[in-house]
Image 1 (cartoon, rainbow, N blue to C red):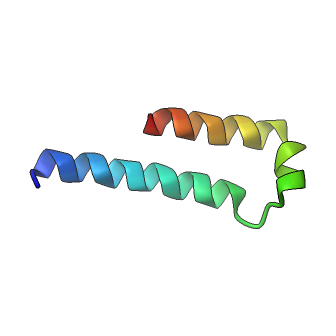
Image 2: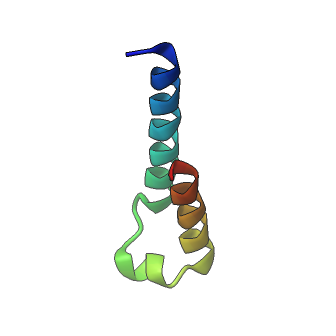
Length: 49
């Protein structure tokens, strides 16, 4: 694997970790009722995409 690929994978993992931290300890009901959290997670998913 090339260095560039490793850098990209590391950035993807970082973004996944950010999303995980935002939803950790949050129930589905709480998540669905928290517009700011939903938007933050969506932006993180966009960064991954």
